[in-house]
Image (tube, rainbow, N blue to C red; front, side):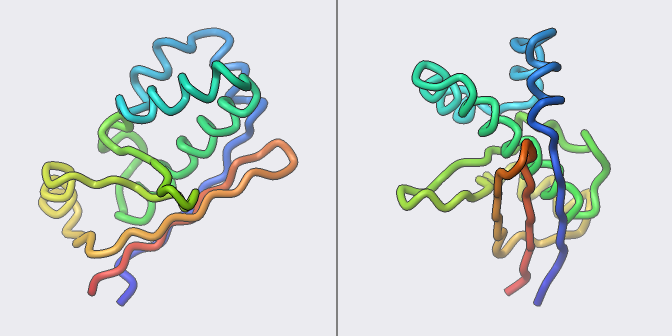
Length: 133
């Protein structure tokens, strides 16, 4: 049974402008330690790709919050990790502390969190479906 859905669209150019002004502060507030490592590795090879990846992370986190019925920043973004399986499939890592917090605050069980991210024409879009099994 579907417990919640969320979608978000992020302008890559707008994010790039924000990063030009305050990259370090933005990343510390928005990204988990795991995401910082991933972006650091990508940035060393291709800075443009790292900005697109960061936009996808941001869109995924906003879509996730919408899916659980939470407002923007009601859960710190750096507590939510958007990662990729070896196959490239994106997923949202939800540890037990975050899972418990979401249940207490929003009464959402996170049995399955499905995520899709796409980048096209200067935008990153993410779609999240939360299922209760």
